[in-house]
Image (cartoon, rainbow, N blue to C red; front, side):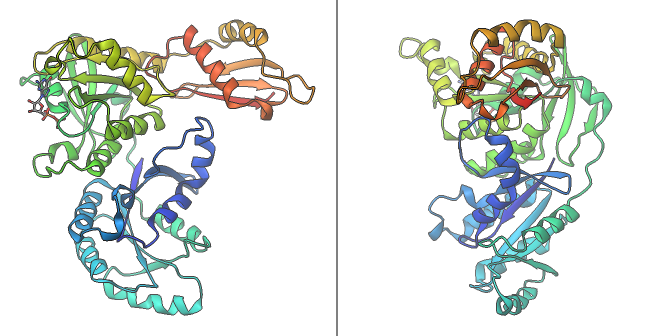
Length: 435
Ligand code: GDP
């Protein structure tokens, strides 16, 4: 997927705009989990083209008195990590010095940049917008975030400037693609080095679906797999800031490009907000997930047991808790093979296809035994179900009155399904449809 970053100084209307962009899809996808989380990242679709959107403003805390340096940093990251950049300005305020700073950075960029003038609510404002030609970024589009007018044209333009995605290489499709993700200093590089060793078994370097993500094929302990690397990881030495935005943004591409995300967390720090953001990114993208609690060698075993630790993490990742959690040490190489084996298992779990007749034979009696609650005297009957032939596990249950089946029942079905089949580490989707 292409990644579009929205940049601009505080209060130009980035979050309103962001919400508009992701609304249509979000509304469909997220009604499933019923969980609201931070909304700095989402997927958008326009004219059949899908892309990811990142609201860089969402990562700034107390954004009213934000330093110019901070904005600059965010724009630089957006330039590094995104495929296209939307620069939002505000016609009410006109061109501010900060806008000029941002424009200066964007003028040097070879990636597509779209200048969007916001808060254009009437003809006078349309006139006022001319001044933004002075930013030296060429043509702009106007819109009103409040009323939503102009959003369609902005979306047309975004889709127009997005680079074409190269075809996915067939060869890389057959091997599991693992992305090692986590916040800075969790031990990702140490883990990869411990696993791969200095004598890297590089077989091929295949450019992936995006310019920066690179699959490198390895063969370790009898397992063949691709590790998804990103330009961001290589740049690590240069950008040292322990910035949530940075590591999340860097993770986006790697996650989207992978089958299974190996989320490395630092045992001495616990599962924090940033770990949660990355976990959620992986879940939202319906990727397989393995959690590695790294630096376990540093934890005093009498103060904290794995059972207690695991319980705390599961509370943090609820409601999707069917995820393997392993306690490892990249330093002492403890349980590294197990970590790799588990990632391969999750990959297999995610790939499994359940034959329709078997699936019906198993699931229908369970449903009959505990059917969805009747509504207004009407019984809800589920007569048939199947797994869809999609890359991500999706199941559809055909019912006479699917609209009356509520989330708790859906969760019940998911739990039963997980008890019977092994979908450990794999987000699944369940739909109820008219038969
Ligand atoms: P990254 O930013 O996630 O790639 O983290 P690094 O791999 O660079 O590791 C950050 C720091 O943690 C380095 O000083 C590592 O030596 C240290 N470290 C990584 N894994 C372990 C571990 O399992 N145990 C201990 N004690 N230290 C570790």
